[in-house]
Length: 142
Image 1 (spheres, helix red, strand yellow):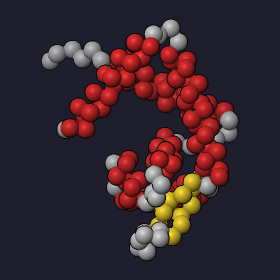
Image 2: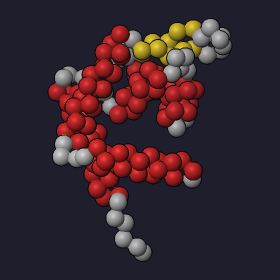
Image 3: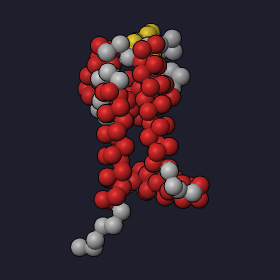
């Protein structure tokens, strides 16, 4: 079996980034898990976001998303509103608390990314971005 050269540093980077974000959030008294963060990003990104949109965006099944949305509502991060385009579904909308939490996540991520970029040229950063995008694209093809 051939030796894998990329996954170890890549996995360490992904894990370190995620753990630093979560630690910074906990230090600010924010009790949130990675799936909550991904969901908030998804809701924020879409103008009219439904549970189906979240399920598709996060590649999760309906039961998982139902539980996830309930947790987000219990934490007062999102609320449900009637969907004017489809009476059978509801829109998932960020609350003010949800928007503030997402802004804190973005600020924390930005400061960690700045730290990661220290000592790197723009060319190196562009190359990393290009390689990462290609890897994601390769995985989405399978």
